[in-house]
Length: 328
Ligand code: KG4
Ligand code: ZN
Image 1 (cartoon, helix red, strand yellow):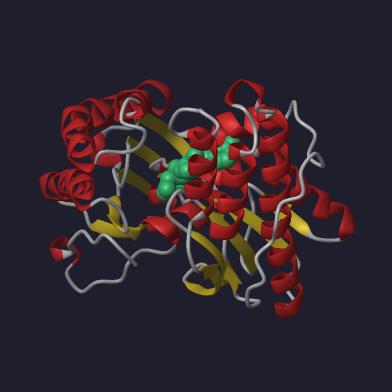
Image 2: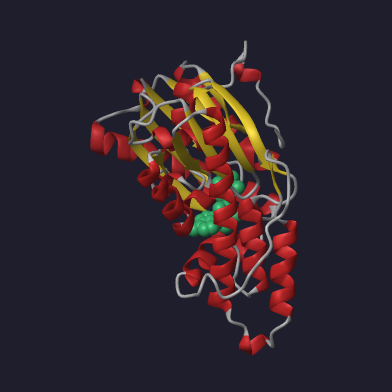
């Protein structure tokens, strides 16, 4: 089964074609990072307009690659899918309406996708991972531990009570003068630093909660305690990264043990983080099966949307009337 996916929930205009939920035929992502860098974050109105400019180009390129490499044309596609939410509504509407138009035009079903479930499905791309597993989902807007009993049976068993992991990464990065989106830059700076240079706090929260606002404030105080030109950026980045990745992996392991599930996977943009991946793969030596999506499938992309349409679509009597939504 060939599914065409579209993703426009934030600042990436993306389209992809995926076979049977796992084999990526074509995968195109147009990033708006350059545009939003100047503002220090995503400006929703500007993002929506950029999606409008990019969507047809991205769709055409996705079909061109499928034709060139696999001789697949639009009439070979079995269904069209797009992210419905959560995300920026003005942005979502661009991809949603494009996918609905393609579905009407080629007389094939339209399938709506929840962005977070899409991230979980990034684990199925070019891999043989199967449920049950525990998924640590860490993105710019969410931090959750999800118990995935089956493709369409998922339960959120822990989540953040304040900032999301990617959000904290970007805010802490900004404190140190790293431009948006700072997460990946902080990750690079951390590789040259001493992770034990500074002791930062861990929030005392319930077993099913994360909290990162105290950590963020502690980094702010630490930064303020140095003169600007004497800031040990790499050491602060490394100490922060050690603290947050340890908290994330420790809790995920704890909840995996409690639920008796021995497979642990990552998803979401922060799943691209080098230290988080290292700590996850270390668990393989302790008897866990582990998986992290390939780097290109961690941050927002449409291949994960097309995979999710195959494994775990939003069930609706009339999918064509599905509306965009901003929050889960
Ligand atoms: O999943 P995603 O692309 O978008 C949302 O659905 O939010 O995640 C984007 C987030 C941003 O906060 C970005 O800074 C973070 O993922 N990110 C990283 C890394 N790569 C992306 N954070 C830490 N280390 C990275 N290597
Ligand atoms: Zn995302």
